[in-house]
Length: 116
Image (tube, rainbow, N blue to C red; front, side, top):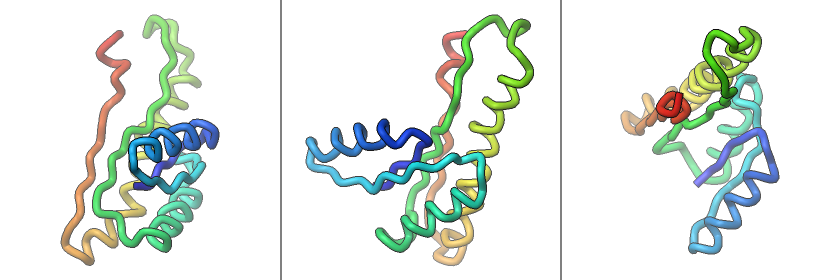
């Protein structure tokens, strides 16, 4: 399993938790809003582990507060992480999945939408 996130310390914690349960993870700090970083990360994954079979896209960023009081700059940041991050990840894995005629992409929405 490969783990991508901006926070390297968070990735290390997740990898340790997986190891405690017998799993193994490749942790790669990356900002998904930068396509070059995403491409480099997925190149590293493919080199270390082979082609990606399943992409679970769960990147999100949340700013709490009433919608009408949300600063448009913060909304744009949330959009970049959730949508641009998803697009960059899909663009990195889909070409290989298409060549192999197999693979899955799972996109998980922000759970903050459920809380309001």
